[in-house]
Amino acid sequence: MKNIDFLQVLKENQKLVWPIIDQNISDSMVFPGFCCLNPKYKTLIDFHHQIVADYPCRMGKYLRPTLLLLTAQAMGASLKDSLTSAAAMQISEDWILNHDDIEDDSPTRRGQPTLHRIYGHQLALNAGDALHLVMWKTLFANFKKLGQTKSLRILEEFYTMLNRTVLGQEIELNWARQQKFDLTDEDNFLVLESKTGYYTIAGPMRLGAIIANASDKQLNDIYQFGVLLGRSFQIIDDLLDLTSNFAGQKTSKGNDIYESKKTIMVLHLLREASPKDKALVKSILLKSATQKTASEVNTVIKLMEKYGSLDYGRQLATAFAKESKKIFQQKLTFIKKQPFRNQIEAGIDFIVNRDH
Image (cartoon, rainbow, N blue to C red):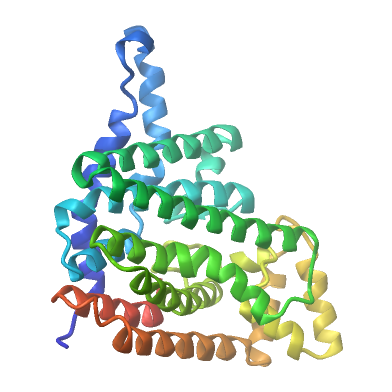
């Protein structure tokens, strides 16, 4: 396999998908004659467009729509038949991130202040709701392209994927609210499967495979692959939160510690630390995000280094990626058309080796 720049693959697919997203957001501002607004209220529509389009215009990595497009084409579907679902996939990420940022009170997103820090919780939440509606409206276009049976199957997969995603978010938020410290790695994997394994990897690939008329067996194999690669993806993401500035997009490290999230590294630290250090870590995690200081967050990171928690996370992420690659090579042979198969395989390496 030739050297493939997966970041370039992401950028190329972003160029294909973004115009559809932009058009669908713009279309959502136009109402039919019986309920259209008086032209004198144009400034209200303009502001609504501005806030709804904010996160989409910041442009994420486009990993999810790219995996959807690559899988569909690698299994013989056309790019044209796949773009609508890919656009909806990216729109789903933007409304979910909007709501996540409100729930976590995150300070920044893609190098800028989060929407609720700019406009307040109420307007930001409403903008997320509006994007959610745009996602479903975008998917309706599949009925003209793909017919009723396949379009309904895509809608069903979207529902199942998103339903599992919000369950994972609820579990994680509830464990934080309950201040649970006795969680296991397996507990953490439950959240990772819901929020990352399915939503980030398996879901987009299954959607692409559905467009390409995949069998149930093929879809199940994709899910198995996605769960493992999703674990690796999220552990790497959590490690980068502790060690990286995300290529200049973040001004502080340890946001997950501020939010008291029970990542793999935190759970390892709580298991391995001395009673004294464990008590210190717990006392910091029990504080609210605004009560924690940068010094306290750095103390937790230093203790992770001391007890090997960062290395433990890296080793797990590498092992899961290796296992997922084995499944890709041995079971996902039906994803075979080039150059798309090789690009997906390059994406596996990108997920493990990325710096943001």
